[in-house]
Length: 533
Image (cartoon, rainbow, N blue to C red):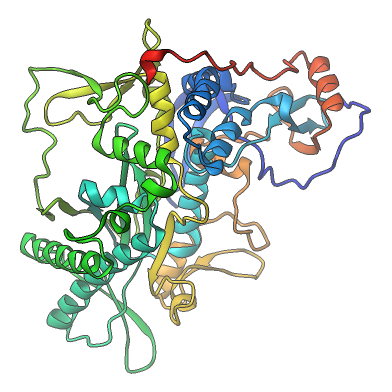
């Protein structure tokens, strides 16, 4: 139903809308020969309701109290943290604006709320970013070669420093990547006699652990082999065998030694002065408290400040579970390296799933629930070695944990290395490219014809080069397997009519459609309890 109100036109990418969900009946999955996933589903799309998200309710109820308590303590919440928290409360709320989608065949209207585009708290926006990044890497960046995941975890003290020192993150990551590349080049020279070997990879800087704790570590997807140029100037790829346990231990020891030397050069060794070792405590005392408590798994806000987080344990579970065991794993001096996961060259679906995993949101809202006394229960994905399967948060402390996960401005969470670096000389010759001819296909210029034909099966024929960002509808179809722009009333195609921004227009359209035209309430601050301090 068209509405004669002043509206602002927008393009049809839906790039600013939030991801919704579908009420659907799944009849199973089928896999086509070309490897694309098809879902037999009779689905009706419905935009998500933020109030159904338990995390939204916790933040809306306690954010103002959290901010007021910090002001009472003369602690300043950084503007980038407060901005992220407030934007989360506006995400997916129709009263803040939406896109209007219309079916010309039957006249049905659909509204899709705007999103906050947050990078840490919002599971919807982080989920969209996760799917978009994974699709971009698989379709346009990573060539069809085996990819091995190298995961480097760091000591607690170093995690705290890396949470705010972007220069140190850069230097530590450089040591990690260069050491792994050196191992690959040395093995290639020993096995194939290659002297000018080239390596490449992409690294995800994760700031969170499984218990909504601050845990800065690196997930690097690195070619499981090397590229080299033959006598005719053609680029060839040579796969290497799985690294031995001895090699992984040698790489770990080298990383530890180089990082320790780096810390001494930076004045962060055991003899470092107070101001050099922890400048954040002087500049942002609140962030220092939140980071330190989150890294150590302790309470940062409220009367129980400094105490360990409460957990629910199951004594019958073996304490040996959860330890790092198996091949391609090593641990030394608080550092741990894991390199047991490898994706074959043609397993693009598995590679995309791995990319989604390393780019996933920090909070799994489906594992979050409220206890009768108001506290928050969070179920761990993997139980700890002592049997803990759940952790319990005070709502104010949970907001403090979320604040610690917000990355500082201009802190890149995805970084490219080696021949995948933006200015690398061989990058344009290796990454999949889109043909500008009648039918688009993804191909790798340095690959064989058989590989090019296999790569060409990863994209539908569109007749034009696809832009960098995937649209909302494309991501929903790619991830969930159904078309959200298909009208569920008549089966026709729906199109984006306009973006609705003026408050008066928003209210009239939502009232006409029978949808709530007022945003959910944000609770005012509760007066402080003396025991809080």
